[in-house]
Length: 124
Image (cartoon, rainbow, N blue to C red; front, side, top):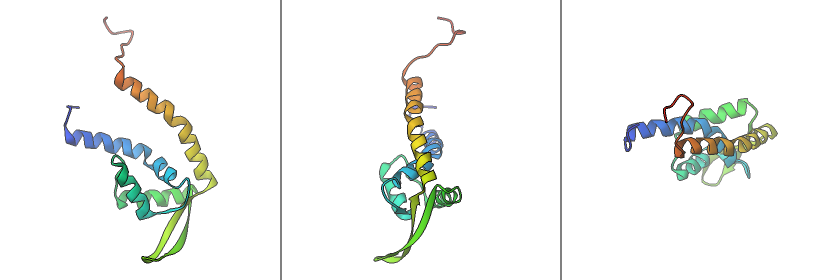
C-alpha cells in the first residue's frame, strides 16, 4: 500500500472496522442500554469506527437473533418511542471473551508492524 493513498487506507480501515465493530457495539452497551442513533453517534465520535445506519441496524438485528442483546421500547421526550438495546448474559460473556483475546491480538499485530522479521529462508 502506498503511503498516503486515501482509497487504500479507507479500504484497510473498513476491513478492520468489520472485524471489531460487533464487539465495540457490545462494549457501548456494557454499562447501560442504548438506542441505535446513540450507538451511531458514539461510533462516529471515535473517528475510526464511524459507520452508517445501514451497517449498525442489521448488526443490531443479528445480535438480537443471536441472543447477545435484548430490546425494549421506551417513550422519548423528543420524538417517537425508541428501541433500546441491552446486553444479555450471553452478550456479556461474548464481550468478556473478546476483551481477553483482544490484547494479545493487538500486541501481535503491533509486533508485526513495528519489528522487522526474517524467516529461516531469508538471506541475512
